[in-house]
Image (cartoon, rainbow, N blue to C red):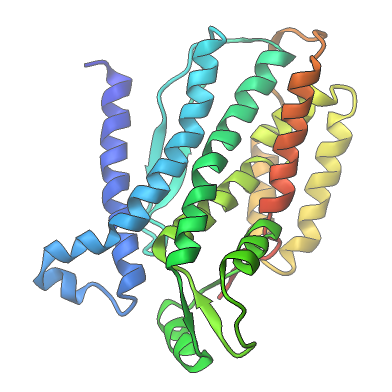
Length: 285
């Protein structure tokens, strides 16, 4: 077996395990004592783990398969496990190992990942919302004291909850099912990747759509993360990561090839997905 597929498989297996623990922890926020006595209880983490792995995998396979279709060498997805008990992973990525021919190929590869992940996350969120429970504030506050985290909402999630959940008194809250939480993370990762900045998918899309204006759009988008950081400090960290990795795009063999109407519409669709999945304040601890 080649070196890279072996590493890919090992990282995937470890990430499956860490996300299983995360899914179990969401069902038992008091800790892992029961799991030590009965390891088979880890099955409770399956809904969250499989949903999240499928969403992240779809995103990266979208990039990988489109790169292969365009004749560009790329690695299989690398999953990144995390010890964090709430999520269990830092996501996944692929490595492009060859030059990209033109703007058309760049846009195709950039759009394929977020769109593929979104198409898996959307039905997962619908199913997850249907399985979610409503709670009276006293019960919800008790759960919050154990898990100590509340997720923010996007335009899309607010729309789905409004249309999929029966009207509730203002005193009731929704406790998200693990499948819904995995889909929430999927939407969040999609929005992060579609930020129109630098080497992110959104940055590549902006570069392909507006080659003469992408630097200005990059700077404006990065600047807007600063006030958002006042409400969630994670945006400061994300802005720092973007600055460290820089705004340079993959070299194109042909810089001036025009985009056809279909690709322009795909680029606009991807940016629309960004706007409806973006969460200004993701976590309220």
